[in-house]
Length: 151
Image (cartoon, rainbow, N blue to C red; front, side, top):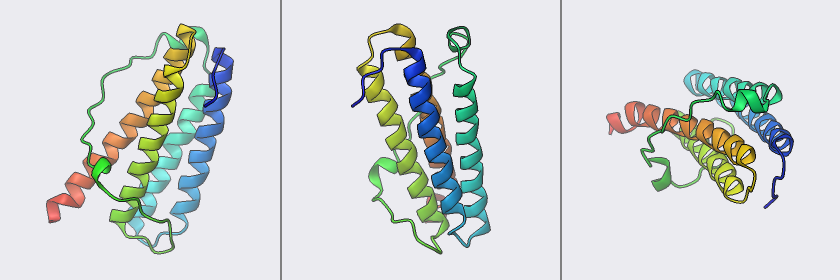
């Protein structure tokens, strides 16, 4: 795994990752038939674009202003099998796909943060990990409300 030395290294890395997530969610939204699934994926794409913009504007001063509120982990996605992205995915499969994607992003930022030496680098990676964990929580809550409630 890449070792980050400066805040700018993290910013560049995060911008690339958030752009990739935006592209992934946007492309997947075009493959689903369910209006609810499409809307959810488009919302996720917008949020990833928001993360990209946040990182493009990030400075040392702005970094210390972010509040890293603890985000619960329902762990629903941890017990579900991966799903393949395909045309006509069900809303359930779209939620699972998104949960798994957000968990992987969270793990990536967390692992990278563990390798960082500089406090501002660790803080920036912790911030991004927290943002991804918020997404996972949002998706798991939606899964609990929409899928598990119907079982």
